[in-house]
Amino acid sequence: MLVVRLRLLIATLWVGSLWTVGYLVAPALFATLPDRVLAGTIAGSLFRIEAWLTIACGVALILLFSYRTYDDAAPLRKTLLKLTLAMLVCTLVGYFGIQPFMASLREASVATGGVMSDGAKTQFGILHGVASGIFLIQSLLGVGLILRLRSLR
Image 1 (cartoon, helix red, strand yellow):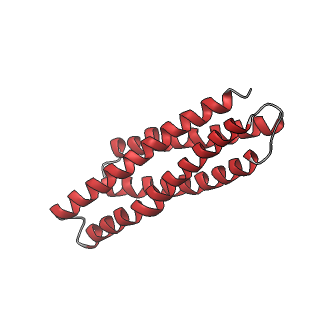
Image 2 (cartoon, rainbow, N blue to C red; image 1 turned 30 degrees about the vertical axis):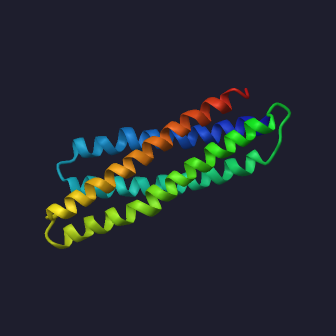
Protein backbone atom coordinates (compact mmCIF):
# COMPACT_ATOMS: atom_id res chain seq x y z
CA MET A 1 0.00 0.00 0.00
CA LEU A 2 2.89 2.38 0.76
CA VAL A 3 4.35 1.84 -2.71
CA VAL A 4 0.99 2.62 -4.35
CA ARG A 5 0.64 5.83 -2.35
CA LEU A 6 4.23 6.85 -3.03
CA ARG A 7 3.68 6.36 -6.78
CA LEU A 8 0.63 8.62 -6.66
CA LEU A 9 2.43 11.24 -4.58
CA ILE A 10 5.42 11.41 -6.95
CA ALA A 11 3.22 11.50 -10.05
CA THR A 12 1.06 14.26 -8.54
CA LEU A 13 4.15 16.32 -7.70
CA TRP A 14 5.48 15.81 -11.21
CA VAL A 15 2.30 16.54 -13.15
CA GLY A 16 1.28 19.39 -10.83
CA SER A 17 4.64 21.08 -11.29
CA LEU A 18 4.38 20.69 -15.07
CA TRP A 19 0.99 22.35 -15.13
CA THR A 20 2.00 25.09 -12.69
CA VAL A 21 5.16 26.11 -14.52
CA GLY A 22 3.85 25.66 -18.05
CA TYR A 23 0.33 26.96 -17.79
CA LEU A 24 0.41 29.41 -14.87
CA VAL A 25 3.87 30.78 -14.08
CA ALA A 26 5.40 31.13 -17.57
CA PRO A 27 2.34 32.88 -19.07
CA ALA A 28 2.16 35.15 -16.00
CA LEU A 29 5.79 36.16 -16.50
CA PHE A 30 5.16 37.24 -20.09
CA ALA A 31 1.93 39.00 -19.13
CA THR A 32 3.48 40.83 -16.16
CA LEU A 33 7.06 41.71 -17.06
CA PRO A 34 7.53 44.47 -19.63
CA ASP A 35 10.85 42.98 -20.81
CA ARG A 36 10.15 39.82 -22.87
CA VAL A 37 13.82 38.82 -22.81
CA LEU A 38 13.82 38.86 -19.01
CA ALA A 39 10.54 36.92 -18.94
CA GLY A 40 12.04 34.36 -21.33
CA THR A 41 15.19 34.06 -19.24
CA ILE A 42 13.20 33.43 -16.06
CA ALA A 43 10.85 31.01 -17.83
CA GLY A 44 13.86 29.19 -19.26
CA SER A 45 15.31 28.81 -15.77
CA LEU A 46 12.03 27.42 -14.49
CA PHE A 47 11.78 24.98 -17.39
CA ARG A 48 15.35 23.81 -16.69
CA ILE A 49 14.41 23.05 -13.07
CA GLU A 50 11.24 21.37 -14.32
CA ALA A 51 13.22 19.19 -16.73
CA TRP A 52 15.46 17.91 -13.94
CA LEU A 53 12.47 17.38 -11.65
CA THR A 54 10.87 15.40 -14.47
CA ILE A 55 13.92 13.16 -14.74
CA ALA A 56 13.99 12.59 -10.97
CA CYS A 57 10.26 11.84 -10.74
CA GLY A 58 10.29 9.67 -13.85
CA VAL A 59 13.20 7.57 -12.65
CA ALA A 60 11.64 7.24 -9.19
CA LEU A 61 8.36 6.07 -10.73
CA ILE A 62 10.12 3.57 -12.98
CA LEU A 63 11.86 2.12 -9.93
CA LEU A 64 8.58 2.00 -8.00
CA PHE A 65 6.82 0.27 -10.90
CA SER A 66 9.36 -2.53 -10.59
CA TYR A 67 7.81 -3.41 -7.22
CA ARG A 68 4.72 -5.48 -7.65
CA THR A 69 2.01 -4.77 -5.13
CA TYR A 70 -1.00 -6.88 -4.26
CA ASP A 71 -3.45 -4.73 -6.18
CA ASP A 72 -1.77 -3.91 -9.47
CA ALA A 73 -1.91 -6.27 -12.40
CA ALA A 74 0.94 -6.61 -14.88
CA PRO A 75 -0.98 -4.96 -17.77
CA LEU A 76 -1.71 -1.89 -15.62
CA ARG A 77 1.90 -1.65 -14.50
CA LYS A 78 3.00 -1.84 -18.15
CA THR A 79 0.59 0.97 -19.04
CA LEU A 80 1.87 3.10 -16.17
CA LEU A 81 5.44 2.42 -17.21
CA LYS A 82 4.68 3.35 -20.83
CA LEU A 83 3.02 6.61 -19.77
CA THR A 84 6.00 7.47 -17.57
CA LEU A 85 8.50 6.68 -20.32
CA ALA A 86 6.50 8.70 -22.86
CA MET A 87 6.50 11.69 -20.49
CA LEU A 88 10.26 11.35 -20.04
CA VAL A 89 10.77 11.21 -23.81
CA CYS A 90 8.73 14.42 -24.14
CA THR A 91 11.14 16.16 -21.77
CA LEU A 92 14.21 14.74 -23.48
CA VAL A 93 13.01 15.88 -26.91
CA GLY A 94 11.48 19.18 -25.78
CA TYR A 95 13.98 20.46 -23.27
CA PHE A 96 17.21 18.73 -24.17
CA GLY A 97 16.54 18.55 -27.93
CA ILE A 98 14.62 21.66 -29.00
CA GLN A 99 15.35 24.16 -26.23
CA PRO A 100 19.10 24.48 -26.99
CA PHE A 101 18.24 25.68 -30.52
CA MET A 102 15.79 28.21 -29.10
CA ALA A 103 18.42 29.40 -26.62
CA SER A 104 21.01 29.88 -29.35
CA LEU A 105 18.55 31.99 -31.37
CA ARG A 106 17.78 34.06 -28.27
CA GLU A 107 21.50 34.51 -27.49
CA ALA A 108 22.20 35.58 -31.06
CA SER A 109 19.50 38.23 -30.80
CA VAL A 110 20.92 39.52 -27.50
CA ALA A 111 24.36 39.75 -29.13
CA THR A 112 22.89 41.93 -31.89
CA GLY A 113 21.23 44.34 -29.49
CA GLY A 114 18.08 42.34 -28.81
CA VAL A 115 16.90 42.42 -32.43
CA MET A 116 16.03 39.12 -34.03
CA SER A 117 15.99 38.84 -37.82
CA ASP A 118 12.76 37.85 -39.53
CA GLY A 119 14.19 34.43 -40.36
CA ALA A 120 15.30 33.88 -36.79
CA LYS A 121 11.88 35.00 -35.52
CA THR A 122 10.19 32.50 -37.81
CA GLN A 123 12.56 29.73 -36.78
CA PHE A 124 12.11 30.58 -33.09
CA GLY A 125 8.31 30.62 -33.52
CA ILE A 126 8.33 27.20 -35.18
CA LEU A 127 10.58 25.72 -32.50
CA HIS A 128 8.46 27.29 -29.76
CA GLY A 129 5.31 25.86 -31.34
CA VAL A 130 6.80 22.37 -31.54
CA ALA A 131 8.05 22.59 -27.95
CA SER A 132 4.63 23.81 -26.79
CA GLY A 133 2.95 20.92 -28.61
CA ILE A 134 5.27 18.42 -26.96
CA PHE A 135 4.57 20.04 -23.58
CA LEU A 136 0.83 19.72 -24.20
CA ILE A 137 1.23 16.04 -25.08
CA GLN A 138 3.26 15.53 -21.92
CA SER A 139 0.57 17.28 -19.87
CA LEU A 140 -2.14 15.04 -21.33
CA LEU A 141 -0.03 11.94 -20.70
CA GLY A 142 0.23 13.18 -17.11
CA VAL A 143 -3.57 13.23 -16.86
CA GLY A 144 -3.63 9.61 -17.99
CA LEU A 145 -0.92 8.69 -15.49
CA ILE A 146 -2.72 10.28 -12.56
CA LEU A 147 -6.09 8.79 -13.48
CA ARG A 148 -4.64 5.30 -13.85
CA LEU A 149 -2.74 5.59 -10.58
CA ARG A 150 -5.90 6.80 -8.82
CA SER A 151 -7.66 3.62 -9.93
CA LEU A 152 -5.27 1.66 -7.68
CA ARG A 153 -6.49 3.33 -4.48
